[in-house]
Length: 398
Image (cartoon, rainbow, N blue to C red; front, side, top):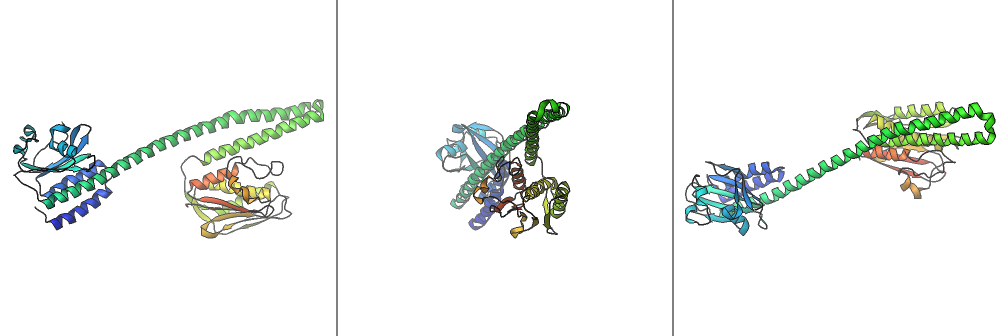
């Protein structure tokens, strides 16, 4: 059925919309082979791709077989002519045109054809339309076919971009998997190869002090005490490095998490471990979020542990956990605080704003917190001033 030009334009608009959503070459060809026949009233249509110096007849829809799956030298077929000359070609009688390889056409129904290149600059293919009787398409039909070819050009570029993007994603995923595997190996090495020697050193120094303390004297015992202290700090560093590594790996097991209940539990443990401290605790009653319970426990362990530590020199410490603006959760204390000039260092591994003689720590805890919050799609920030306490706020899912 022949479409009017207006009907053809309406159909072309729909085809362009369909091509805009096509994600594969196969999807593009399915759309084009049908649309080309409908827009031109042809008895058959082919989708031809340039394959170096050959024409690949990749797909077709017709009243009889054409050349689907075959390849012909670029200089021997009419689709190659259209691509090399970068212009459409119309042949009303194929047997009267020397550009046509007549032997290839005799087994087919074709008497007339039109070939439209895909992409006018450096064509990548062509759309062929064929008639079983001698026929010359109208200028309107040719404009519709050229509009289809132009839309196909854009669609093929989109398919190519998507394929490249998917390949890059696959490569990136493979790289991340390799990094995760290396982290897993590192964690295993740290767990087994470092912990055991540290435990041995600690045990031997304790035994040496117990069995030969008198012979060592005060100087020797002081040296052993320093060894024990260094070993303890190394053990803490190993544990914190493992925590940082675990925070970067694995799939998030999301669930509803009651941060208020977690905070009460953690602060209760801190109070039992340090019963002499007088700390006022304020926890908002409803702090439910969506996240990984294990990782969010690590977030509060670090933030509340820091609040407990840095309020140590206050006669009466105060720690508050609550809701802030924009659905953020905050942990606030009235402790030592820090100079906000250096807050960009807070969440970097091994960065400390207080000396180890003043407050113990490895400088990894906040880096772990930052990694966990980032994995949840959120952000974390801090506000403080020296001697005025600190407030750490975070959001999840942006």
